[in-house]
Length: 321
Image (spheres, rainbow, N blue to C red):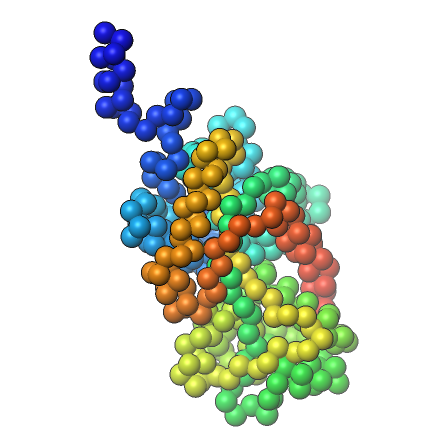
């Protein structure tokens, strides 16, 4: 009877481990994206990753997690009482990006004592304790101008701004990360005063704003400008010397809390195989993104959080048009 019961249980639950938890390799993998990043670059990267995983025989889907950046992060990483909806499973991954971190830093800076600030601080604390599995992809920021612009290089642009900070109007992708990167460029280049900019919902729309004459310089990720540059409608500038390397937007995945060592190892192995998948590499490169599936140090997120806090302090050098 005992043997019969064991066989029956195995037939109904063929992948149960010795703890009764489904083994991570056999469960359906879900990549959760914060709802505030729906339609954005991080969701696009996650969907490409899920499609490539499915082609290699790994069931995977992308879903949106309700709430803003703070709610999505805290609900996934600090769900100690199982109150979040849905509660994380061992086969869940949280998609976190440079935009997520920038949104948290902005929420903490703009509401010092309100509930939003408390939620942002709690989410940041949760990220510092989290274990990132891999950076999936990165996306270099690009400066570009119209074909007939007299600007020939990033160095010339910076020289103009030092002489006349209001001499150029920037079109930028309107997420918090890209806007603060304009602040970093201004600060590192030693530009005095404020630099005017106009924010657009996406990098593609920022490029259209440039083409229509609403601005004369665009700052957006390479993936957003690739088509415009390839078609010869806009021209990329070299990144200014003295302003550091061109910043890169990034998309990473975090594991659910409480994974067993074997589950953690299995997920890392699957993501390592993803990095070598030809479909995955081709899909990202076609979009102008850099393939970057790699292991990351445990303090990866802590360093990005510190960097985002610093960037918030330099955004005072910006002004909207």
